[in-house]
Length: 181
Image 1 (cartoon, rainbow, N blue to C red):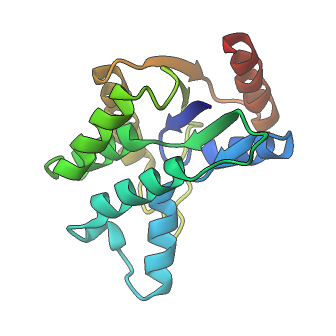
Image 2 (cartoon, rainbow, N blue to C red; image 1 turned 90 degrees about the horizontal axis):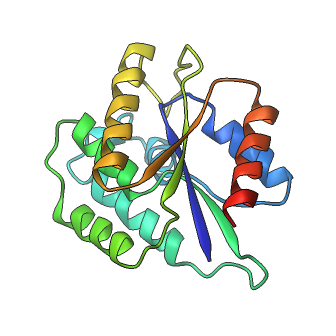
Image 3 (tube, rainbow, N blue to C red; image 1 turned 135 degrees about the vertical axis):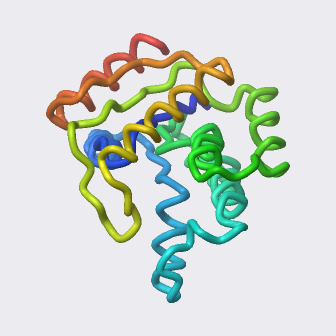
């Protein structure tokens, strides 16, 4: 199974690109942090990211999704973020890296779970806040830098996906994937 990662600044357009690729037949795995935030906000917690256990919850969901068997005909998946992103999140939040996250990064590195080329979706010049994404554009740029540093720290190759139309960005990623396989 080939597993590719899309990452980048909050609000850079990852979800829109992934939806476009999903419409084109790619198997997509959604972002875990957003799922946790959405669920816990629905349960009454306005800021679930402020919980001490937030990062661990994200790591646990990422691992469950990654370990879940894909349909028998699926040979390639595209992930909206990975545990390396969760490392960046923990760093951005100023929290120590939990042992659970370190262990998961060790596992995905040892088992070569994800392809070494990471699609880094560059910011589009603004960041639209949502209930799950309460971050300013300036904060998103700082987060973008931390993400890139985290991926480089763990030996991943960054493939830049510059700002542009969603369809063009999705097509560029699909073309690159076909060249890599």
